[in-house]
Image (tube, rainbow, N blue to C red):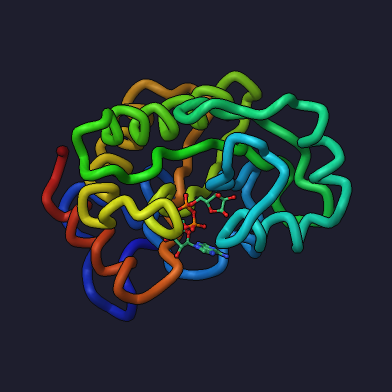
Length: 187
Ligand code: AR6
């Protein structure tokens, strides 16, 4: 599933339900092995997708997170999914946008790589990402989508366990941005 309606999948984007899958919706509804949370370094919850994930998961999630001792930007930590349909949550901390010269691109790329590495190490096969850093943290979405798609494709090329990586856009506009970035081909 990549495109809406009957439009064909853009080049390089499989529509078999495996590989990179672009979709639009609320990530808390995704019944995958792991959803990724765009957290802050405390891992104790916040607004945006972080707030939505904690609300849907219930208080068990923040209790487990409290034992993790936080997480630096660019790294990731895994917990159980509690009341979510997803079995696990992978919490990663994106960069705060500071204009683009403060290593934001590399930190964002690291969030994708580290989250995927944890999923692979745990033997998971499906994982769903929100658009990390593009809300409250202010990272421009076009630039973030290119980085996300580049890292996901590179990872899938060698992954053994992870078969499906969903990029979940929260709005039609964000979905279109992902679709255009994916249609550009390998980035
Ligand atoms: N499902 C999918 N995507 C969502 C959802 C949802 N339910 N809700 C929001 N988004 P943000 P950040 C999208 O602000 O920029 C928190 O307070 C949203 O439209 O959630 O990484 C943390 O604790 C946007 O495209 O995360 C941190 O303090 C994307 O998710 C800070 O915000 C990310 O937006 C992290 O900021």
